[in-house]
Image (cartoon, rainbow, N blue to C red; front, side, top):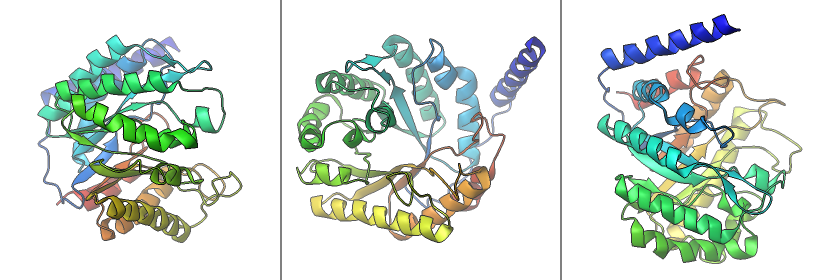
Length: 330
C-alpha cells in the first residue's frame, strides 16, 4: 500500500511539473455557447480537514485548468462547499476555503477562464435523506459573505446556492429569493444568477412568489430522470432529449416572463441510465444530445457535471472531453 501511495504521489508531482514547465497555449473556441462551462470538481461535502486543499490545491488547479482548456471550456462553476447539520448549521472551514479559492480564482483568471461562484450544500441530504435542516438566517449570512468575496476577487457570476428550492420550505423559497437579491447587490456588482431544481413543483414555488424577478440570469439544474419519484430511469437518447427539452423550455418561459435574457443550465448531469449509473460513453452521448438541444434553444451557457472521470476526476476516461473538443474548439 505504501508503495502504491509513493508511486501515485510521484505521478502527480510529474504531472504538476509537466504542466508548469510545459504549459500549452489555450486553443481557439467555437463559441457555441457564451459560457462553455464545467463544474470544477465533483466534491460536494466538507468531510475532512484537507478537502479544500485536495479540491483547490496547486496540483488539482494545474490538472483541471489544463484539461478544461484542451476541451474548449471558458468558464468554471466553483463551489464554496459545506456540510449541513441536524440543527440547521453548517460545517466547514472558511479561512482555509477562502485562501485556496482565492488562489484558484486568480489562477484561472490569468489563464483566461471566467468564474461562476456558488456557496453550496448538497440538496439530497435535505430533501431525499432528510438528515439535515438549514437555518435560513445562517445561510443568508453565508451567501452574503461569499458575495462579498466574489466582489473582492472579480468573480464574473454568482448565485445564492444550487437547488435551494429543495432545501428551504416551499412557502418561503420564493420570498427568500426576492429578499436576498438586493442584499447581494449591496456587496456584489457582477451578474447574479439562479440555479434551481425544475422538478416536483419546486420551480413553481419560486415562480409563484415572483422570486426570479430581477436576477440577471435564469439557471436550471438538470439531472434527467424519467420519474423523479425514484421508480424509473432514462432508457434512450430520445427520452433523455425529450426530458432536456421539456425542462429547458420551462427555463426559457420563465426567462421570457421576467424579461431576463441570460439562460443557463447549471449544472447538466445524468442520474441513471438503463437501470444503472451512466458510464463515460453514455454520458458523452447524452451530453452531446443535450448540447444540440440547448444550442438550438439559444441558451447562453451550460456547466457540465462529471466531465473528466467517474472514478477520481483526474481524466482517466476522456469520452466527454473528446466530444467537447469536437464541439467547443475551432
